[in-house]
Image (cartoon, rainbow, N blue to C red; front, side):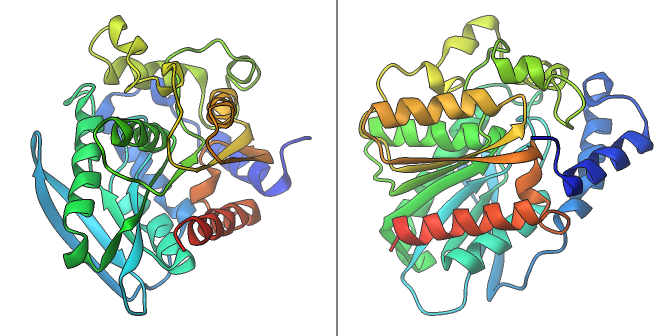
Amino acid sequence: MPVEPQTQTILDQMAAMGGAPLHQLPVPEARKLMDNLRALAGAGPEVAQVEDRAIPGPGGQIPLRVYTPAGSGPFAALVWFHGGGWVLGDIPGADSTCRDLANRAGCVVVSVDYRLAPETKFPGAADDCWAAARWVADNSAALGVDPKRIAVGGDSAGGNLAAVTALRSRRESLPLAFQLLVYPVTDARFDTASYRDNADGYLLTRDSMVWFWNHYLRSEADRDHVYASPLREKDLKGLPPALVITAEYDPLRDEGEAYATRLREAGVPTTLSRYPGTIHGFFAMTALLDLARKAVDEAAAALRRALA
């Protein structure tokens, strides 16, 4: 189908702004651009309790923001990893999404401010996300969380980190109940049909993804590591159930859907939901897109079912 009207309005506005494409910007300028796009998410709803914390990590303190909904615990929990190609993004940028999910899913959401590239290369972000998930499980009582009802989730690079955390949880005996993967990065290749068909003109571009990967990885050999490219993991059996959300006009569409297919083939209960007519990043645009609100509703409902 053609790009749906609300999404097309956003694309037209972005085109009218002009300026250099993301992959031609120095990292500090790219981060400023990301900050300017926060308005697309809106302010987000009020949550009963929001607390900023910091925990020990492999490279120093890891900032967290803990969102606790109204009601009495113990609650289920979602450990959320923001997107931004491992280079951009932060807790404030994910604030609206985390507020929505905390309220609509009725769970504690722990947003993780993992270390970014190029200052910290692979596997720094993955190590921080693992440390945060482990900390939530180990400190569940203090958080008012049921340790048997912990999920991981994220969008884009955050979806990659959630998938990697789920892989690692199987190997390192941390029971997880669910994984929410929103247009996840799953492979360090650029040879799918969606990369070809959606290379330019739909906000996230092929050149931007090359730029992100080049900042994140230490060497070409890292592309084959399953903690960078979880689609290359040969055995996906025993992973937590998943909801994988993709967008039609997204270079990452096919690799996200391929990961969902692989999960299903491994016997993992998996729902794949492609949103037609929209673009990478839409999930956070609840202030502007009906499809974004629908997708957040779907994600919250899946969390409620999986973590009941």
